[in-house]
Image (cartoon, rainbow, N blue to C red; front, side):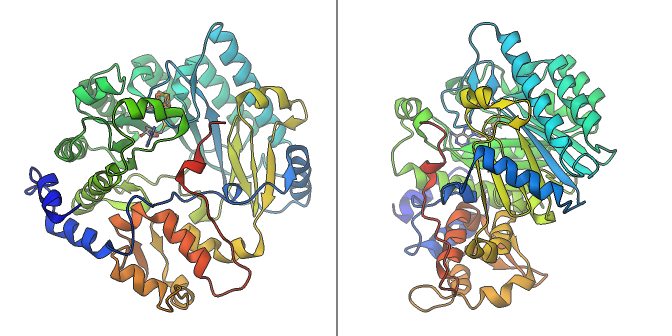
Amino acid sequence: MNTETFTHFFRDVERKVDVDSIRAQWMALSPHYDVGNWVLPLPPWRHRPYEDSGPRAWEVLQNEFAKGASDNPFCIYLHIPFCSSKCGFCDNYSFKLGSHQQQVIQGYVDLLCDELKLWSRQGNLSLRPVSTIHLGGGAPTFIGESALRQIIECCKGHFAVNEQTELALESTVQSLTPTMIQTMHELGFRRLHIGVQTLQDDVRSLIGRRNPSVNVLQTITRTLELGWVVSVDLICGLPSQTLSSLIHDIETLIEYEADGFSLYEYLVYPQNRRWSTQHGLTHPERHLSNYWMLVAGATLLESRGLTKNLFNHWVSERDKNVYFTFPTRGEDLLAVGTIADGVFGDYHYRHPRYASYLKSAHSGFPGLEGGLRHDAAYQHIHPFIIGVQSGTLAPHLLPELWTFKAVDGTSLVDRWIRCGLVSENDFGGLDLTPSGSWFAGNLIAEIASYQPSSDRYSPTLRKHDLSYST
Ligand SMILES: C[S@@+](CC[C@H](N)C(=O)[O-])C[C@H]1O[C@@H](n2cnc3c(N)ncnc32)[C@H](O)[C@@H]1O
Ligand code: SF4
């Protein structure tokens, strides 16, 4: 694509975003980085097979707890894979239930609570402060008020949940009814990730959103009035979406005082490929327009004073994004439920897909699929990985990072600066630029490939490897 196409793409937003800066960011990248060839930051179990089976992983973890290691705060993540219907565009691990919905939900919630109780009996886990309880999905509110209450009461009854613990969940407007919001507030929820995707009603109906954007904005207002922190998810690259509509959405949401913004490129995986093809979203050229959208959105957010605390999440002062930023605080993550992956110290474990989870989780065993420990090579680059994921490489990491050389013998950091992927910040560290946000996974892969050690950690998987489909 040439600069004429760029100028045409940006024609309607010239007065809203700094188009010259976006053009400069794009030009700095070329020809070194291909925007279609980016990767997401991936967890270690995506790079190499588990070293322990599920039952063995549980033994390893129990031994760790028995040694009585940490008394630091930790996070709790619960995965709720259910939704009222499966949206064609969605790449998450979630599904619509068939018959006997209430029974199925109750069975799953009971299993989650059994699992929580099991973990709470390990070492000093029940005594360590909980920094956040985060429910992801799916649409966790779909399970209804009483199931939500059961889960939160179970957490409160078995772990050291305190006044500082942030209770948060991800959901859609559809199931955030006034009664649900009221129940959530009573239970102590003070943070909402709302899947807005887009505020354009024509695009919303194309992606199967049943509620018009006015309902989204009402829900944001209602929850902000209750004192919650509200973060919005927006996708770049939906069918019929234009750059000016994305910019308009961001401006509207800033006006409505949303605290945080997650920007996602539209991803095509096996589970949404058919829908994506039907809507013309599989053309390779789309990566470039999606990249331009993301960079424009990020540039706008940053020009309005929002800063990054995760590679694709921009925040105001109020949004601490406690769950997603746990590695920057060196916290552990207790993850519970199907496909949930957690980490204690340098040991990662993961749960299997739903049917296997139902079969394997039982009294005395949390239904794990497998586990693995950081190897020496991963351990060495771990602080750099966390830095890139959080959007900032702290000053103390730089002396070593400057020694990393790319294949042509030039400095990796120099190359990143030249290509506009990072910029020096006021504190002597490096911040990911909007282009750096797009290429966060590639930066991690480069750190791994160019670390000056013979024992290299080599992440080779590409974005479609994240797919949960078999
Ligand atoms: C766990 S989902 C929860 C969203 C919530 N259930 C909803 O429907 O709005 C988290 C976010 O993943 C993002 N997402 C879903 N499908 C995606 C796709 N194909 N590509 C990129 N992001 C996607 C959406 O922005 C969504 O809000
Ligand atoms: S977008 Fe949200 S509601 Fe739709 S299927 Fe995905 S998780 Fe469920």
